[in-house]
Image 1 (cartoon, one colour):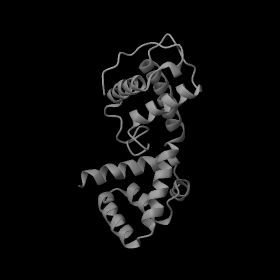
Image 2 (cartoon, one colour; image 1 turned 90 degrees about the vertical axis):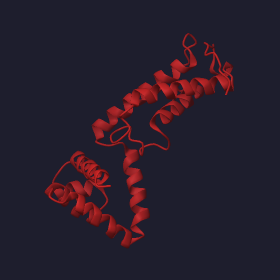
Image 3 (cartoon, one colour; image 1 turned 45 degrees about the vertical axis):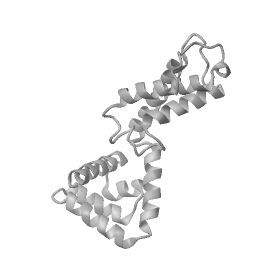
Length: 183
């Protein structure tokens, strides 16, 4: 890819493809730098999106900018506009994550994984055995695992344990941290 000088344009359709590409590369690198250390667990976890978080938000910004959903600012460079939109979306995503406890994308991924893995009961038994070893000595995690064996629905697990959904997510993350350490 040749180096392209990032300029200001009156309309998005005046930006050439190489210039869009260059602006997106610059925006992704900038956002990756800002997200350093924040993509493991939480709102920007690498497993939440269909691509790395920085790319996800920049591609979404491109779609919003080019479609007209976000107002074009002719006095700003293309990469700056992408970054501003991406940061706005990231802010809203984080706010929703804090409000709801977890982004809906995580729940969808977990449900798809559960559906896929439920087909192989032997595999699930091995998974639970490993998880139980990681939870050994922690009554909260052991209770979480028992409830999880009964249902993969976070609301039902929370109800069964008499805790909030946020606490269910906290236990899930705690168990995942223990499993990563047990490697």
